[in-house]
Length: 329
Figure 1 (cartoon, rainbow, N blue to C red):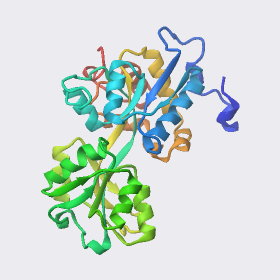
Figure 2 (figure 1 turned 45 degrees about the vertical axis):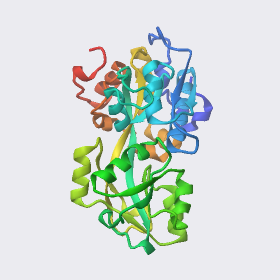
Figure 3 (figure 1 turned 90 degrees about the vertical axis):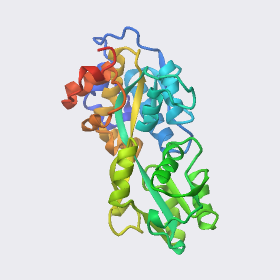
Figure 4 (figure 1 turned 60 degrees about the vertical axis):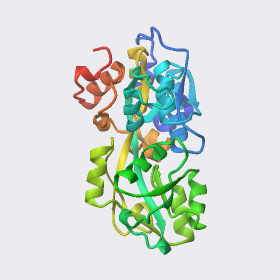
């Protein structure tokens, strides 16, 4: 049942994922194929999502793959309506979608998208050229031109609001990471503010070409953001960038895989098992998966759990998920 492409080490044993594909499992209602809503090509979401989609398809013997989308907000809509079986979202867009403030369908409470498994954290990081003299958020000049990443992204949705909360006056700019990094280097931007997996390639590239300041939040700034937004404390490790001499205080937003709440319990349980039972294999797909660990189930404080996912985490991670957080209970 396990294909040779998975590797010699795995060929010696039958994985639990393969066991789920066995004949003893009730496959009533299982789809013949599935899609995972990701984001634009070239980003972490697309690589990570396509990777686990292909892994699940191979392990469970079902056709499936990643689909290019507009990212977390659109994924909530696609999964809610069932146009995609699975997707990936950050906790902020998830909360907005549940509240009916998703800009894709204002007023629609997208309550039919359920939590499936934890993925990884997206840190919020700020960079300026050293020559600018900007070493803190408070030193960002009035009317500064700030690049916030692609329009409609998690970064673009939340970072401008965070800056406003911290009293920063700015002109908003959007674009891809590499493009905005080039604009910063050319003096067309004062600051770039990205919510993205670290190291951000554009920042790493800047470090090679010029001197930069990677700006951390003060304790007070961090506390204010934690109070106002669905984020967690995060430290950008000093080893992330050559510029950093110590860990940099930041915040991050958790990313979760989501499933249409009406999918069969046994199917979602099997999918979760494939992804969560072999972290080394997931890290081979994308390094961000180092955080795709069973113990991180508790990072979901927003979405109802799919009953199949809740069953897996209760049985395999000792998860204490209350019934009122499980869809249909």
